[in-house]
Length: 505
View 1: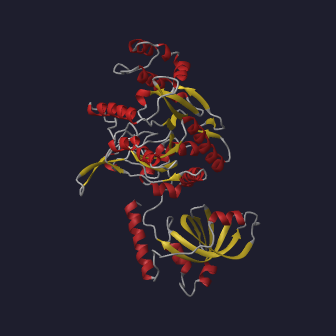
View 2: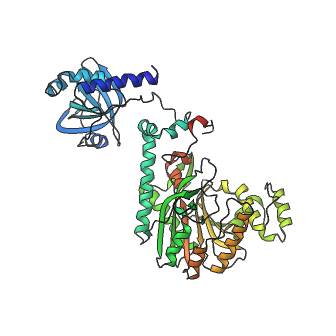
View 3: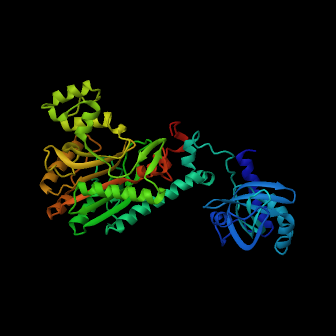
């Protein structure tokens, strides 16, 4: 049968239920137990034994097996599954006052996918299956569309993301991923709250997009007659709070960047940014280790994890190494030894660094060499420290290395997971750097920042020494759930309209 034929048949069943006086779309149901609770509580119940305990369960019918006067349904709720043992004589006797032909209607009017409530007692069948021995049932929601017989997630990736609700129904491991994501974010919040950090929400709509190099989404406010940007970072408003007198603040929330889509990029994603007064990037390294190791231990029970077949050891302390030293380690290039840009470019080309003809500074060239030759090789957790000033407009100058800033990025499994600065607090220096960014923006760089005058005004009132930290929540969840793509850990990732969807999705 086609899907339309199945739908038509099920709509007819809806009408039959209504004619019988039943509501195929019930208002409520009260369960006494979850399926996982029953499985755990009666794990030792011997085969053939029955417990005279009244229980009520509800969930979705995942499978039906009907044998004359017996039927066996697999019922799934949020926590797991349990079998419903349905015996004609028992149901007919118990439901006689409601429906004199209740068992026949159960066989004829229910389908896999329906949501059912059932009351009865606990029994383990002779074949060893823990079951609810049903005395009465209620159809709570009649499903009109069939569940897939087989859900080929790897061969039908786009459909899994587009119809996430079906993915969640038929793949318990997907539900586990999002349950774990909730545990991760709750654990991070708890860790910070226990250390006196306050979570304060900042605007999503902003008059000037800042805090990162990224192309923003643009929208328009009709009443105010002004263009606004969806935030590309929470940084500049959280720093305003530090200026205002808060000493430990953070926000965990959505960020929006008008950029490409890949296994590690989604235009709408989640990050946490943390700011602590009187701290620097060294303090932020300790905080980063503490957050990730504590949450991992709480949720997984170990710091030895496997990601896509590769063992990862999250045990602290994590390696701390400068960008200069890593580039030298993997390419042989010693950027401290170069005196001219031309010399650095020639050596970089010989080392296989590509697309550097338009690079205008040794610092940016160093970053190109790092991104092309080093980044993907950083599998174990590594703090890459001391970045060029040219690519870090919001970081404080390094206290002992001119041309560098006090910044680190955390890399695990070859991808950036966190980013941190000793925050720039000099308003004059900050203006010069933002104006340089604005010049790039005016020249056509769609990812360059403009000048946020209100933020500069805030800095002129004085911001204490501050350490800042950002962690990509989606990438952390990918790591701790062994998920290969960011779309696997975002419940509803952005997709093209179905009619224009490409095979790459």
